[in-house]
Length: 152
Ligand code: UDP
Ligand code: MG
Image 1 (cartoon, rainbow, N blue to C red):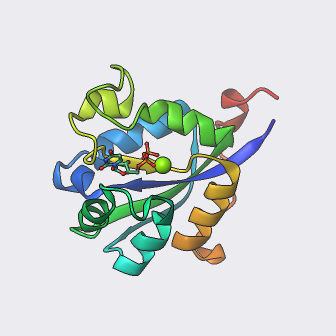
Image 2 (image 1 turned 60 degrees about the vertical axis):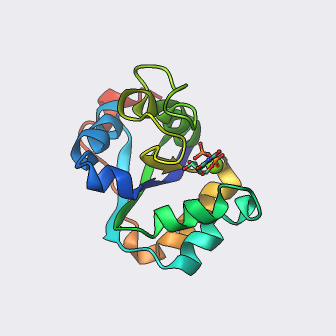
Image 3 (image 1 turned 90 degrees about the vertical axis):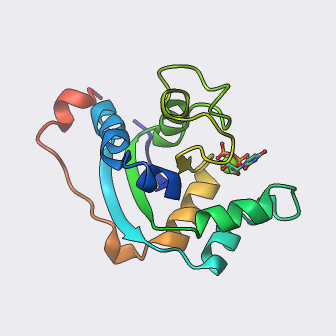
């Protein structure tokens, strides 16, 4: 099984709205394994690097302002095809268009305030994890439940 790691960020709206526990539970419920987790106030330079593909777009300046407007929680999740699995749990970018059952569909009504970021591919996942975590902040381990979560 193709075990992957993906970076997620609980954006400032998730913390301000006190939804961290409920949204983190969705990832735990799915069976994904937490391998990194921390609360931080992001530096502007780090957010600018993280979103550099969007530089020049009309929403870029507001996005950087939003992502530095308060604390965030960054996390690394691990599991089979975790990158796609997590993107599918989030749903489309716009909370108004995201279907019920997805995190953005269930909790959001906005395009910018869409609660959680997740890496969109293997290359971005690797880059984003390295941008937010040192190697010694990531923990590899097995859970006793793992053999009941993944059969292969
Ligand atoms: N965003 C925005 N307006 C837009 C598109 C995106 O404010 O028209 C914000 C939104 O917070 C989104 C982030 O910019 O999550 C990055 O955009 P992207 O298209 O990469 O969406 P994602 O990959 O997060 O679904
Ligand atoms: Mg994106």
